[in-house]
Amino acid sequence: MFIDPGTELPYIPTPSYFLGCFDIYDREETLGEELEKFDPNNAADRELLITNYSLKGKRSYREKFLLYKCLESALLDEAYDFQALLEHDCQECSSLPNGWDTMENPRIFFEDIYKLASKVWADDLRKAEAEDRSTWYYI
Image 1 (cartoon, rainbow, N blue to C red):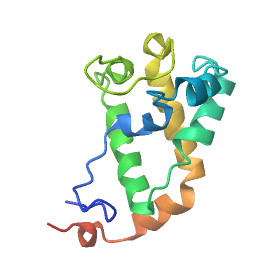
Image 2: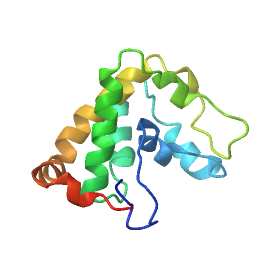
Image 3: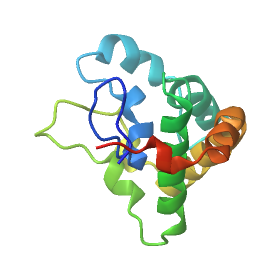
């Protein structure tokens, strides 16, 4: 199991990790208003959202690789419910911008994340791919 060096907890990513940067809970008047300018159903806006927010987070090259591979697995699963990742849970202290829960095709949003991550993270993905991943795992 890969241990996140920052938290010393197992790093087990899901595709939802790409959405954390869009959480506007308690930031509706700042980040929320900023994100309201974009339409995630529009390809050009989607590219800006993904490159300027989703792929900019501080992640190690190993975290990027594992997150990328987790998304790849989800995309290969025709039954994976990407819509469920966008639904608001009133029991959680998080929320996505207005209208994201009714995105026309969430799978396309995540397909675009995958395509753009392939380019933006290319060097990090190659570096991780070249390593023996068994040396990453600690318990």
